[in-house]
Image (tube, rainbow over all chains, first blue to last red; front, top):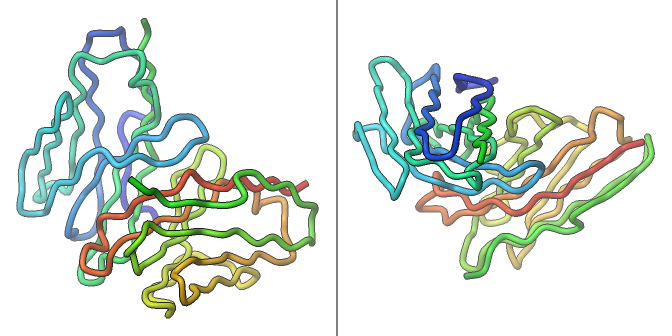
Length: 112
Length: 113
């Protein structure tokens, strides 16, 4: 079953602008992660936020987690054309955490 | 650093044929996962193995089977292929104490004609 829903499904911005993508999920989680996928390629891990964390930063990435609303957001600041990709959130559910449940992804296009 | 290796990268099969996908995890990772991503879809968990035993099962069809070998590599066997099996198949690996930290391979693109 699909755990996460991504919002928006597609986002197009100009280089230098910020991009915000949202993800909602249904059940309790251990961790929430964001992945990036270039067209038809592998999944690259971007950042992980634990269920007891509210915000995390990594370079130009900022992730927030609101467990009361079962939602997360990924902010990419000062976007570049190379950021063009699909972005997925993925959750692992207690207790086993041995499988990731992916959201439907946001296709981000950064125009030069 | 060594990454997850998948082979082949591309595979074309006809309906009703059989396909075998291989996955070589990152060294010292003992847990392997398989995911299927259809065109325009999100990745869906199929099955996972820990120490050569099946640990979790997702939406894997009965026509598919998988196993993990003594060297921790894994194979996904797909029989009686259908057009709907055309997808990207990802393998991921992790250590058993950090199962949420899964490293994905580049995927095998299977096309069924």
